[in-house]
Amino acid sequence: MGRSQETFSKKEKEKKKQQKKKDKEYKQEQRNANSSKGKGLDDMLAYVDENGNLSATPPDPKKAKVINADDIAVSVIKKEDIVEEVLRKGKVTYFNESKGYGFIKDLKTQESIFVHINALAGPLSENDKVTFETEQTKKGLTAVRVNKAQ
View (tube, rainbow, N blue to C red):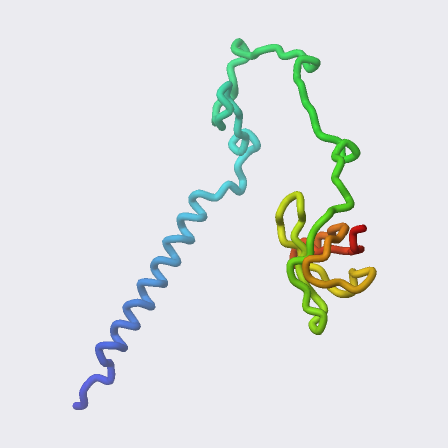
């Protein structure tokens, strides 16, 4: 008779396969046991206690506090109230005419803002003082409508 064709690694792979199958069956049984399907609405409800924590038991109506809606102060900043300075002032820190881009340093916030040659109103060189507006692009803040300052 010949030797068995099963090697050690084949046996190990088969053991792992069987163990994985058992684990999968066990997980399926656990999911079925803990499933919330078919439960009533009362089993799925959650309540909030006086401290703001979730609880499975409904709150005691004797402990209920009466709050006047007029006493609640809610404030939201309206979009019209936000005043953003549209025209910014800055200084050109770098500009490469052959490549067509550069950077402007905002004099107020000291941040470096990208500028493309298409956003310029006229010729520009390094250390020029400029006025500009900004626009948010997917790559970040970009200067638009750039003019030399008088």
